[in-house]
Length: 128
Image (cartoon, rainbow, N blue to C red):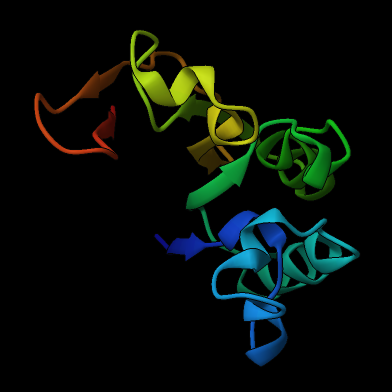
């Protein structure tokens, strides 16, 4: 079985330009074709299970599309997505941040899913 864990960084890109004009401003940049490069890489690796970190579920930067859903559709896999932040958290009230989460993709049909949150910390999601 082949497992891929991939922090896609909201498909915002990498490198020095990511931090311009100010540090971490890349997290607000649009995907601009980076998602297709991610899909090509995942196809090349051909994993059975994929854990995606830092997935955008539909903010302006992902053109209102769920990136996990888009990747799963392109590579013909099933997926589950969940926000990194619990529904009652302050983060759910902040635009863009409330669209940030993690996902699991698999070639097998998903018959059960549960999500848990640690009691402390900011990013507390545990996917089961």
